[in-house]
Image 1 (cartoon, rainbow, N blue to C red):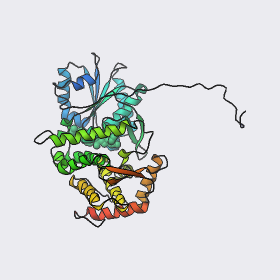
Image 2 (image 1 turned 60 degrees about the vertical axis):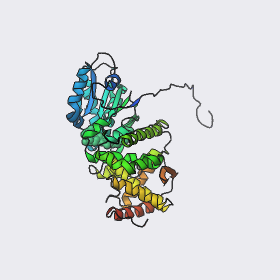
Image 3 (image 1 turned 90 degrees about the vertical axis):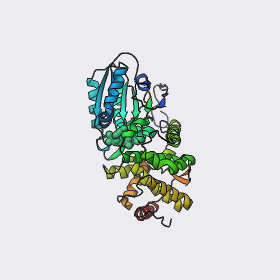
Amino acid sequence: MTGGRPAADHIWRMQAKQDVDYPIILTDNLLDPNNPALAEASGGGTARRLFVVDAEVHRLHGDSLIRYLDHYGIDHAILAVPVSESTKTLETARQLARDIGALGLPRKSVGTAIGGGVLLDVAGVAFSLLRRGTPYIRVGTTLLAVIDAAFGVKVGVNDDGQKNRLGAYYPPRAALLDRAFLATLPHRHLVNGAGEIVKLALMLDSHLFDLLEQHGKRAIDAAFQPGDDDGPLAEILRRSVGHMRDELAANLWEHDLTRLADFGHAISPTLEMRALPELLHGEAVAIDMALFAVVARRRGLDRGETDRILGLLRELGLPIHHPLLSRSMLSAALAATVEHRDGRQRLPLPVGIGQARFVDDVTVDELADAAEYLAARAETTAAGAL
Ligand SMILES: NC(=O)c1ccc[n+]([C@@H]2O[C@H](COP(=O)([O-])OP(=O)(O)OC[C@H]3O[C@@H](n4cnc5c(N)ncnc54)[C@H](O)[C@@H]3O)[C@@H](O)[C@H]2O)c1
């Protein structure tokens, strides 16, 4: 006995390393038979391959997908899955895992998930659970997926009123990003994805912020499709994917909970869930960014820069306020984030365009004050006194 505790009989150690190494491929016209990227990434051999496709994407692009697979002589099964934030649940993932299992595909065959962040999250959970892990690749078809959700290792579903409460770290074999899909994406979802790009620009890259000010609205109106003066549009996408990759790669398993990529995600998870199905993810993130930009202003951020942040959000068509931002809601949302971040706020605050610092002492009073300011400002396009 040592200190009253029985000594262990013996201690073994279990040690292994899991390598993570997969390509994130930004390519044009993935479903054009002249582009072999999808045929190559979705696995070799003659075995039947599985494609799990967002039902709306299947409606719009299913014929092209089938033509593409036929062109390469790929024997395939396609599951078209209707999904939404409200049905991003374990039940949906479990049903999908059952449907995949019922196809009786070879154990090592690689599945392909094609869709926006919701489909990729649900399919990711299904693939992570089926036989304790079935290999798969991710193809992003929304702006949010192209610049974020398609290429990280996180998969998840909402549960118990909480966003992404259940999930896993489950790396894909490859991620494919193609802006051609964005041609059919509704305008509101383009704006939604732009919210996450503003986040990256504000935290990390003043040049990207400049590009958004000069070309962001045009990029959204053109659904990021190539055309005259495509350089800035392509650069916005490339820089966004690059920054997001860098942020994720440096902290893939989220051992460090102090993350710049969490800007815009302090009160937005609670707001998004409470406002379901009204608010989209990027819209809730935009409201959160606006709120913390005002908090940052009160703590010394230059007024002109604060105006640029709020001005850009509005110029791109993003909301900066929501009636649910009551004092009690803000208090609950902040508490949930502190719990999620292991007992500390770890809040990134902009100190300039493209620069941030972390704080742990934002008060509910500050948030309520900022929300009040934004409620008034949302009513008018004129700049108020910050
Ligand atoms: N796992 C991650 O790393 C990660 C990262 C960021 C966000 N997310 C999650 O992503 C989700 C939001 O994803 P989203 O914004 O892509 O929304 P979404 O997946 O709901 O897609 C938006 C809508 O567009 C439709 N759609 C998809 N592609 C289309 C296309 N090319 N043309 C026409 N319609 C199309 C969908 O059917 C849906 O109705 C949230 O649940 C968020 O939590 C996950």
